[in-house]
Amino acid sequence: MQKRLIRKLDLEMLLSRIEPHPSPRPSLEQYTIPADVAATMLYIVAYTYNDVIDKTVLDLGCGTGRLALGAAFLGAKQAIGVDVDKTAVKTAFKNAEKTGLKDKVQWIIADIDAIQGKVDVVLQNPPFGVQKRKADRKFLEKALEAGNRIYSLHKSSRRDKAFIKKLRTSGTRIVPVSPSPFIRGFIQRCNGRIRAVYAMVMTVPHMFSFHTKRRHEFLVDLYVIERK
Ligand SMILES: C[S@@+](CC[C@H](N)C(=O)[O-])C[C@H]1O[C@@H](n2cnc3c(N)ncnc32)[C@H](O)[C@@H]1O
Image 1 (cartoon, rainbow, N blue to C red):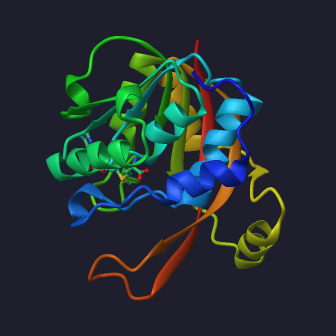
Image 2: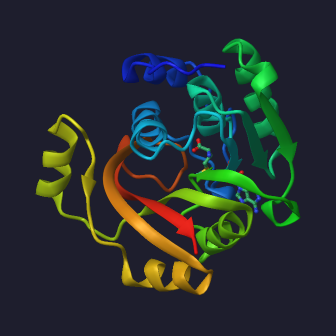
């Protein structure tokens, strides 16, 4: 089990070797979390909140496995990745072999609705609900049912270009912000409490025919949540 502090650069290098989905579907919002965002998120979870080492970690909507594999690399006791898409999970399995983490992560092909049981920590980069409205809400509900601590990414409604530029060039690439009133209310109704929210810049390449730019840059908020 890995217990020493891992350099963020080493984590980002590992995550960048994890292949994205070979044929992503817009209806499932199958874009892969960029390695830099995944590394920043996992680093905060592991070393600010002490929520990876020796913990059971569930990655809901794991795609090709960046968050689950990153957690395993940082020393999770057990990591589990769940995704409804067979190709995504097959790719995650190959990624686990390629990175030498095969024995540390279990993969499940299933809708998150089918998941039962409890874990210490849920990590998730769910569909933002851009294609299918409210898609992220079912992920929050399931995360609060399954985990004691939840780290969940959500698309921000902020569009401030100066803020994005400042954040992109800042050393930490992350800044505390206020929660969206809607998401806060929803989390409270699901018996959760927000401990913090951090804004990050996410840049995804052109993937779907309706993307008009070569790269799309936007703000995401990382919600740090605990069950009441
Ligand atoms: C935005 S992608 C994120 C993938 C991966 N977690 C990452 O960050 O690279 C959302 C993922 O959720 C999966 N997904 C969408 N709806 C799902 C559901 N109801 N049950 C399980 N997985 C689902 C999609 O197949 C997709 O892989």
